[in-house]
Length: 187
Image 1 (cartoon, rainbow, N blue to C red):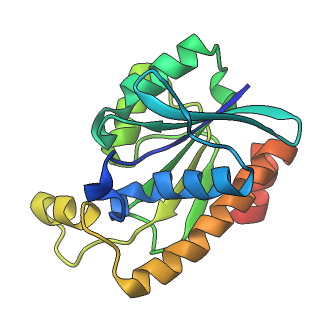
Image 2: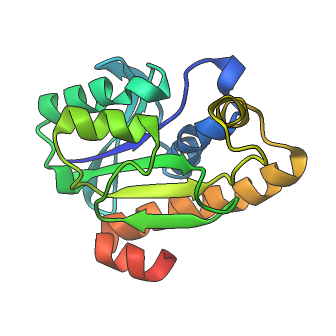
């Protein structure tokens, strides 16, 4: 079983925020593979399916991003998923808008949702896909919070749509060829 988690905040208010890129990537991937988010487990909306012979559990935590670790930890434990089979998709302020980066492991990079997941799991050793959202002109905490919780502009939306397609292709590569191949092809 592979567990793929997209990070975002629940509810329509946040649907088009920069912080919800992880949800949007997972939604696109799920639609592409006819997987529906029709179940709930561990405070997440989940979809179950199979792609390229891999059983998948897709999850969108229904907590706020900053406490996603509780949900991911619960799913990893309940479904007995090895951390090498966990893939987390999230936004990244430190990457240019639309840039996709795949890592086999690593720190949180300042992302509070990733920090929560790493803390809960007690490990940084799990794959992740980061999607660049760029940085605001001002770099103080209030400006960053407003920026990540702000909606994408129409111009940014075009760039992110392309990145979402790339992420879906990267997930397919991860499932069929492994994390090293995905990193080699998409980084």
